Length: 227
Image (cartoon, rainbow, N blue to C red; front, side, top):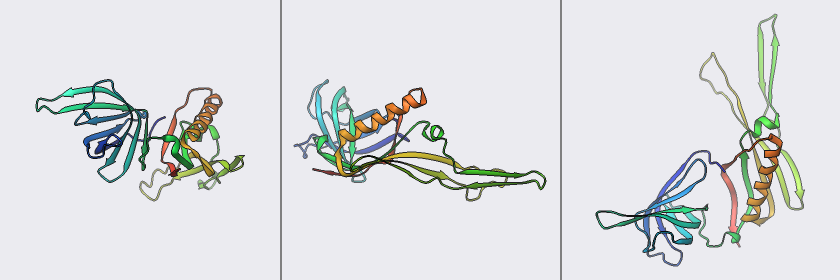
């Protein structure tokens, strides 16, 4: 999976059950969704230690759960303070949980590279009147397509566009994008939602006849709760 832009967040981090032993650190998520936590400390653990979960709270007050953690690097500073690099498999924002299966998702929005082009659904209409030297450009946002997968589960494709509101009088540009959404009436465990999303992406790889990357959205988990 790719993210729209790399994420970096400073905050305090601790091991579940030890909230008093908090360490300063910086969480970084690369454009290819590699999750790394740089800590100013090491929790008193040794290099190569597997950690099921690390909790965090960013400077702006957001809760973070890092799941599937592994200490990949340990450093010692001249000041005597140890440091560590933690790699994680999954990052959950907005919740503290040691058990990802306890997270229930009611909707998920995502997209993939090349989706808008493959759909070939456009709201652009161009008309020419060559005699009068007139050219008309009209744009209508395409309607959302909704498909029922099974009872309580729907799949939809929605469109968005960036349109000019002024600027250069010599050039105008409309950029249309598309996203996909899964809506679960009663909610599903997050692992099942991930599985559905990756199955959809596998289908798109076959449809495109080439590998394609999932792109997350800021509202990837619009609503979720712990059961």
